[in-house]
Image 1 (cartoon, one colour):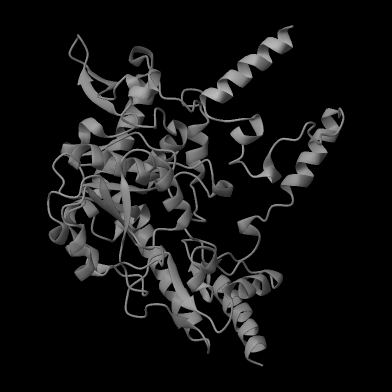
Image 2: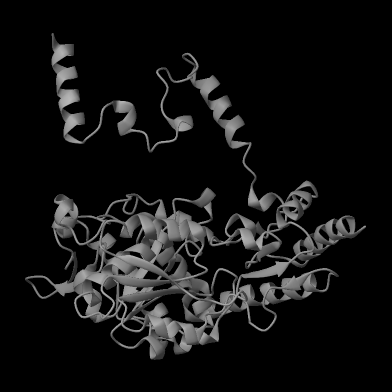
Length: 455
């Protein structure tokens, strides 16, 4: 009887949605990943057997430190001081969640306030939050925030222009966030050298926002972006995605017109970790303060006049009534952001400058060595690069990557995976750990492949 009742309810719900079956309800999910009637799980195992299986599976991963690696494309093979791990694993800090009770959490809250202060100073904007999930969610949230602030007065209602060369994985997150919200995404034209087309950018004046990245997906530092705010005007929010380490030597975006700055915090505090967990940075001007996402720690005084810290401004709806929330983010990456704060504090301003110079130097040294190989050309030879640079090859970049991998070198990222038209382009990533011997190994492996191709 119960089965008949449940079946009737199921049919009634399907009819209300205009569907005829459960299969139709889940038709958007590819059949290859739908759960089968019975999962192909092995039988019970002892702890010893489970541990052996785990080691076998994890051993199949390639450790970036085991060979010369030039695989960048958004994450850094950075060096994290040992002190960061030692401090972050103390019992006082060992939580991934933002504390609600300030009376028992002053240490953690102060640490997060210091994190916000460092991010704010780094990007040149007055307000920062405690972190986002990653750079992609930060970019998406920045766009929806800008639309909430600028949307009513914008000439182009609900329109946001996004850099033509935003990496597809980030663009996908942005599209997921904005669909159904009355936001229309349009592409901001760039040249195929990666630089923004400033004449074409005038079309964005009057839109809600423009999102660009500095350095861009090709690792280029585009001077044209310094004029972008002047072109689009004060009525349009300028959102800039950054490489945070580059800000040790590059002008902070807040100083050349950025209204919101986002980025990947991963270079500070934590390694690539197979793509996550990591954390995103988010800072903005005062105009966006009431609409910014995530958690914000404020500095105040208690009833005795002593300095105190507490969560502030964030609407309670973000945490308990999501349908009324201004943001899809109701939490953050507290522990990892704390590790980032420790790393930044250990570096200090001078240390950050030295780190940025070191990354810039290894980038330039690698670029010169690679471009000395016959058959290799820079995508844009006239622009300075930071961390990444893109080169054109005489054949498919995927083949070059495979050949170099067989030679023991992770030679870079096949840009054809992002854009079909760039299948002969290789994105080579550098970092503070790139050594002279790494560069020599890359040049040898890439040169050998080109020799085979041209033979």
